[in-house]
Image 1 (cartoon, rainbow, N blue to C red):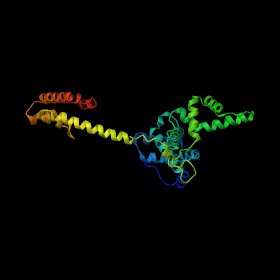
Image 2: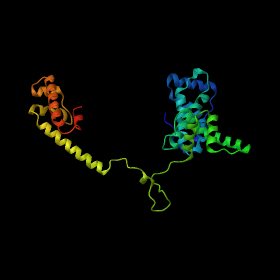
Image 3: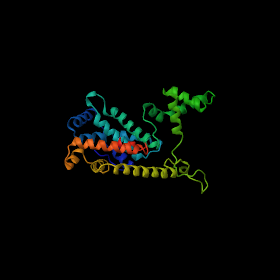
Image 4: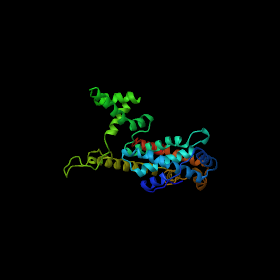
Length: 292
């Protein structure tokens, strides 16, 4: 079932008008969807709890994500909850759906917080959504006692409070402290200031390396052609058909054309490679991979 993509105002208005389900009706709808895949029942169940999804989505607006996107993700979480809900467990659907809605929204927020992946472990997820709240409380408590915490002391307290390693706290602190910047931004406020991308090291091959590589490849091709032309005509033909065609021919196919058995073609091919190897060994060891 596709989500309604109307703007959040009209969707919210529609959700607020949806029916309130009692426990018995909710159970009947859940059974109808689980046992009979009744889409009308699923639609009614989701519409009834869309207000819950929207309410939870609104709590995450402070992370800078568009409300429409948050509502969409909340709706996806609601649909996952409906699909996995087991009415036999005796739990209300709304209680079960809260976890799926929250997980879907949080995953979306973390995916879009930064171009650099923020993390997906339970520790990282807990820190991402709770670290600033814990930090503010610890700072208030310290200020009330007339103390001032430096960054390291604060991170140590957060580590203890959240029950996660200090390294995870320090890593998340750095990621939450700054936003992404464009590599096309200038390094200074001057009009002629160079862009940050200009300061990145070019990982591509340098001109000297390109020229040297081309020379080496040309030399290898020359040696290979010399070794190939030294072979008897039949062996040269086999090597060309087996190694130099875009679509190499099979031993069986060559045997049919030459009037030889598949095994005999293989022997001739091996003999040709051995002769070429000896020829190339007198020139360079760099071409041995040709016969790998």
